[in-house]
Length: 273
Image (cartoon, rainbow, N blue to C red; front, top):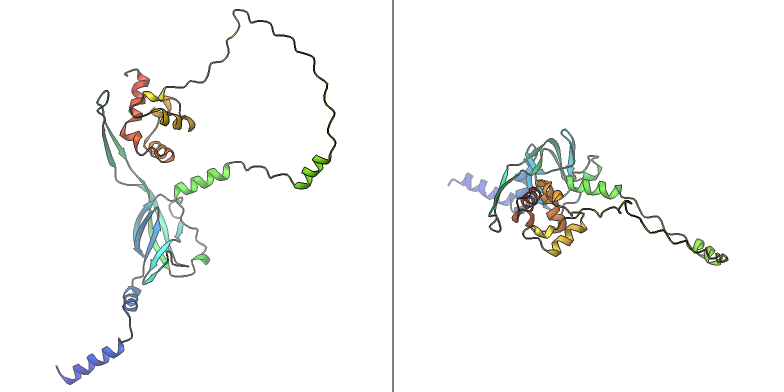
C-alpha cells in the first residue's frame, strides 16, 4: 500500500465517522424512495411506478387515490403510521384474482361431492407518487375499501331517530290540566257466527324446517330466522359472494360450504331427499 492510498482511506474514515447506519440506509434509499402501506388488512412495500393488486376499492378506472395508512417511508418508521405521509396511485382497472377451487365431500346421507370456484375481486393500481409529508393538503381523495363504502352508504340511508323533546315541553305538558274522562262506550253487539262458505283467514307465511339440512341445529335455525332466512329457496339461491357474506355476518365458521347447505337445499326443493 502506497502512502497516498493510506491517506485516502484515513480521510474516508474521518468523513464517515459520525454517520449512523440509519442515515446510510436513508442515503441509499433516497435515490429510489420506497414506502410500506396498509390496505385491506395487508401490507405492501412499494415505490413509484409499481403495479399493485389490492383488495377491491371504491374507485373507477382512471381515478387518482391516496393511501394514508403508511407504516414506513424510506428510513422513517411510524408508530404505527408516519404522520403526514401518503402513497398516491392511479386506478388502472377492477379485476378478479386467480380461481380458488374448494372441494367438499360430504359422507353423511347421500355422500355427495361438490366443487366450487371463487375469484377474489381486486383493484389494479399504479403507484404514482410517495409523499413523506403534507398528505392532508394534497386534495386527493383517500382510498376506501368497497365493503367499507357500502356499509357507510347503508348507515347513511337508515332514518335517524327523532330528537328528544325539550324539558320545557315536558314541564308544560305536566302543568296542563288533565282532560275529563271519556264516557264509557256502549257495549258492542256480538258478531254473528260465521256460516259455511265464508273465506278462511289468510295462511301464515311459508316457513321450512331448516333443521333438515345436515349440520344445522335449532340454535343455527334460530339465528338464520332472525336474519330473515326461513326457506330452502333462499338458501338455494345463494352464490359464492352471498355465502361469504352470510358466513361472516352470522359467524358460521365456514359451515355453509363445509356442509354444502346450498346443495342440500336444492335437493330438498326438488324432492330428492
